[in-house]
Image 1 (cartoon, rainbow, N blue to C red):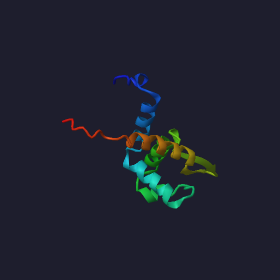
Image 2 (cartoon, rainbow, N blue to C red):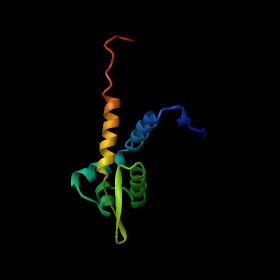
Image 3 (cartoon, one colour):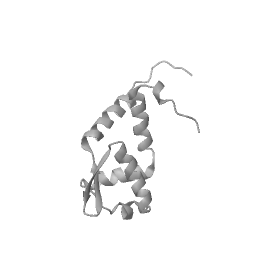
Length: 109
């Protein structure tokens, strides 16, 4: 497998790509939607809500947490997750700047 050349791209380009990658899976989108819908920390009931196996949910939670979009706290033997509001706001700002680039009025193709 080849080595990615992320170093040749700007920090912003790499950050946008990382955000797109982590929210590019429907299970992660479903997890985020669930966390927003309940507007509280979730401790363990995501498996029933999403319909995937616990190890799969854990893998997706790990990806979301590693990028900082969610945060977790330990409550006894379970980990509770919620949206990391500051990081979510940061991601929205970066992605909106990228997505709101104007398309030239000039016909090109």
